[in-house]
Amino acid sequence: MARRYISDLGWADVTPRSLYMNRRQIMAGGGALLGAGLIGGGARAQDALEPNTFEEITTYNNFYEFGTRKEDPARNAHMLTTAPWEIVIDGLVDNPGTYSFEQVVEGMTIEERIYRFRCVEAWSMVIPWNGFELADLLERVGVQDGARYVAFETALRPDEMPGVRVPVLDWPYREGLRLDEAMHPLTILATGLYGEPMPNQSGAPIRLVVPWKYGFKSIKSIVRITLTAEEPVATWNATQPSEYGFYSNVNPNVDHPRWSQASERRIGGGLFASRQPTLMFNGYEDEVASLYEGMDLAEFF
Image (cartoon, rainbow, N blue to C red; front, side, top):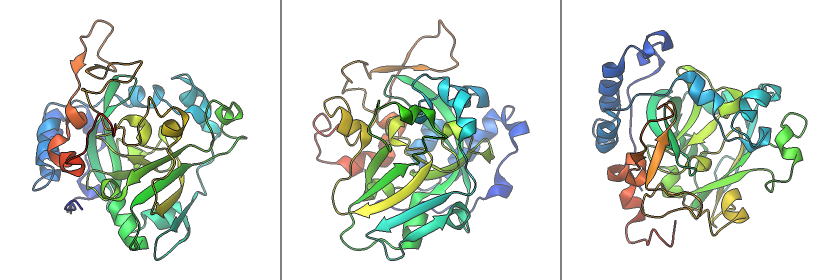
């Protein structure tokens, strides 16, 4: 299991959004500080990162529960009721139950994490998330011996999510991680962007963020977290296993049948901006490559 990252930073340390766009160098330094001792390679990878705008992040989404077009989530997600919000945590845990959103985040250290975000459709962004390590929540509920995977489930509310009335996927949307992936310090449960609560179209009130995997692994609007012994169902993997592996790590050497993964188009880069090479594990190779040591990543894609 990866060594956990312990931060001494909290909300008081987060720069207000109003100053955000004018503090490029400060952000790079903050990234290095956040990563000191653990996320060294990730921090180095972030040094030249410039976050996308709030508008770009919140208006160019894949969230099929609200529609299959990129603009559908921003248009339709206002219908989603996010308070109150409950999350079932069950399976191989010591303290199963139904927890309110407030109970889940109570006592958690909310940090700012500037992460690359890479979609399997070969576009990318850089996003300033606010959230806490998933490992903190799992340790709170107590992971039992025998647990090897973590399963996640998105809300399914046909009255509030018009996209689920269309059977483009087997609803509810489900995802999963191996336990060591879930416990990795880079894996967070995000509750906001730019220091503000998570917008509905981006996965309010709480979503997973796994920066070295394709974006669809970072499941949104979570209502269930289950510890299991067996590999759980992952929606895209179950829908089309020849195209979507369970792991779905960003890998420029393994193409999707419809999209080369060798390069990517940065959203906001302009119509004529050149594509940029995609980095192995989305730039977090130093931090996560050891998780897959000995695995054939072309087979376990």
